[in-house]
Each structure stands twice: as structure tokens, then as C-alpha cells.
Amino acid sequence: MHFDTGRIILVRFPFTDHTTGKVRPVLVISTKCNSEYDFTAVPLSSQIKANRQGFIISDQEPYFSDTQLKQSSTVLWYKLMTVNNSIVHKPLGVIPQNIVTRIQADICRMFS
Image (cartoon, rainbow, N blue to C red; front, side):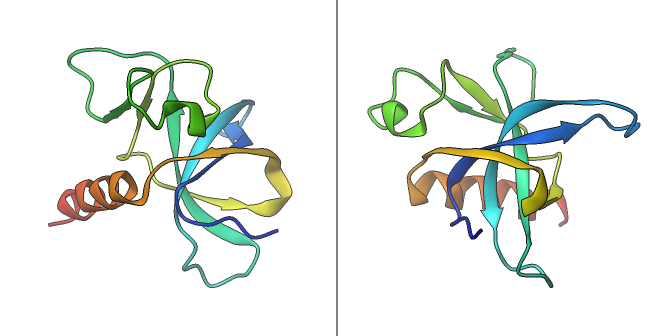
């Protein structure tokens, strides 16, 4: 399975201790991995907090219906993860490329 950058998909998202996890949405931010079965993603959270870092995908945006998310969500761009196709439950929608580019720029700034 191949997912383009900007695709929102549901995956079994492991908690940081890797003992358990839940099915959660993630945003594909890069497909440039060393394996055709892996891609880089960041998790999405429906918990919107004023002091939380992240980019908000608001249900007020004109593109929101294209995301197929149930409610506004925060892109947790500082929690990069490599995802294998084997844990993908199903693809959802997409976000516009200009939004993906902004999120990728935030990630790059984290390393500079």
C-alpha cells in the first residue's frame, strides 16, 4: 500500500512505552523511507489546548470535510514516527499540500 503525503490514515498507534496502543489518526508527512512499506507520519489529537504546540486542523476550514476527521484536531508535528503499512487500519481523507508544507517546515525548525 502506498500513501501520498498529506493523507490522513488510521493506524494502531503505540504508546511511548510500547506496551499498548489505540487506533488513532496520523498524517503522512513523508514517503521517503528506506522501505517501500514504511512512511513517516505524525499523530493527530482531538484535544485542542491553547498552550499545546502543534498545528490545528479546524472544522471551520473549507478543506475540513476532505479530511474525513470527526472534529477539529491538533497535528502533533513534534512526535515523528515511522509507520509500517502492516499497522494501517484504513485511509481517511487528505489535507491541502500547502498545509503539509507548513507542518514539514515546523518539523525542520525543530532540528535547527
